[in-house]
Image 1 (spheres, one colour):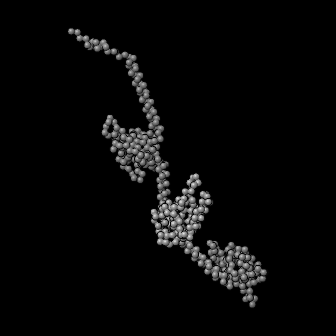
Image 2: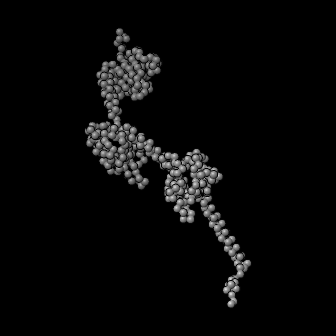
Image 3: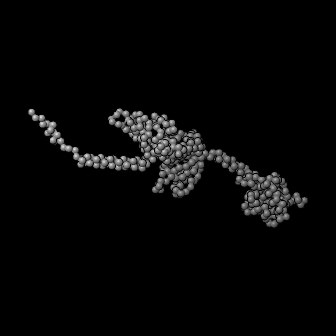
Length: 420
């Protein structure tokens, strides 16, 4: 019996040739070249991305990072790779400023839970800038050989520091304005184009007794006394006609408090326009002027008393401001033979006092203004409108007149007494 199986199979097997080895080598080289090119493209993209990117293993080691991330961290590559997530030098905070523990970092959450972390905002202290870099972070866990737990995590970071700082500054400003609005005595308000209240500061409760919620959506005229309705409407219309470049204007009304009392107020308001020139509404400030009104009433009554006293007095009364006579009573005008309107604002002491006494009179006037002489009675020669020479006894003292230093005094004709 002949055994031919092995021989036949050996005869059928093709020998490995040198050409076959060369093809295999060339294929490997092509594969390695393509792989190198692909890795080169990945590395180039990795390093040039504006987003920060880094890799971290499950034990907390940091294995790779791009330049954008290093800029956000404020670290060199060597400093970053030399750290782990457990390094105590990390300072990471949440949006409220609370310092996070290592287990609360986005990368560690993804590794510990096996779930992606999406759009988590954190602040990372940057030692170069000496401030926190604010980033939106995404952490994607990666698995190996279908294992149940991730072996590493891929983290991306978007720098939002400028945006966050702007938002924080705006929030701070709004908070400051809110504190101001809630604590100032004046009422800050906004109306829509139909003059319905859309915003009013809490200070309205102190002035008028109303809750803010009660006022929102109600017409402003409902809280202005009826006798001022027409003037309020006219003022609103005049603001619209005047155009949007005019400065805020002031009006005075009376408002109705919750107890029915009438509160005198002053309003400063401006219309609000959109970019196309359409009216959006009005904004303004309302101020309680009760004390001012009382002061004005007191001043008016005081002036009435002064006028009544001086206009019925037989003694001449005068007020001199900046060397001009700004007030005289009828007796003063009669003594010198002038009409009131011929003196006030037109004549000065030099026009009345005789040239022989003018220098002495001006010296006495200045001494009273300077406080050197508080009060003193002096006799001067004066010239009446018709040229007649008379002797006058003059008394004067410095006063505050319309916020300025002035001289007020009295004048009596003593010609008969002197000549007697």
